[in-house]
Length: 105
Image 1 (cartoon, rainbow, N blue to C red):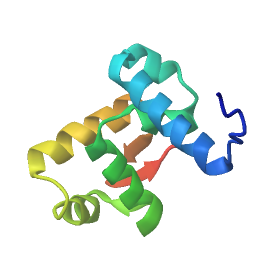
Image 2 (cartoon, rainbow, N blue to C red):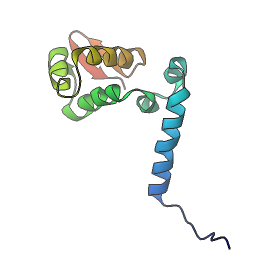
Image 3 (tube, rainbow, N blue to C red):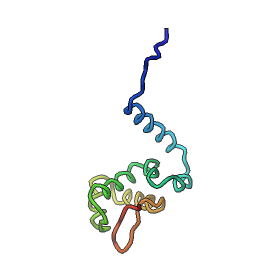
Image 4 (cartoon, rainbow, N blue to C red):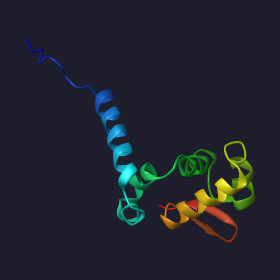
């Protein structure tokens, strides 16, 4: 006998959203990421990009390039840092002007 008494909660929808984002992230092209709404793009990027984006969100901005690199050192190596920064800049999530990094709004 089937039990149809399941009632989804907010937590269930949040988990479903995370799963769906991971599925989409696995096949989405870089061009499609750039066409996604700005607030959704970070969800489709690699973990190192998310870490750097969170550093800026949590530590405040604008942040000097030097300070940004120093804060990232406990999470990743220098090459990973530069690769993640390039991705964030190319996807329009951060900008780097006059030696300072900011989240694009």
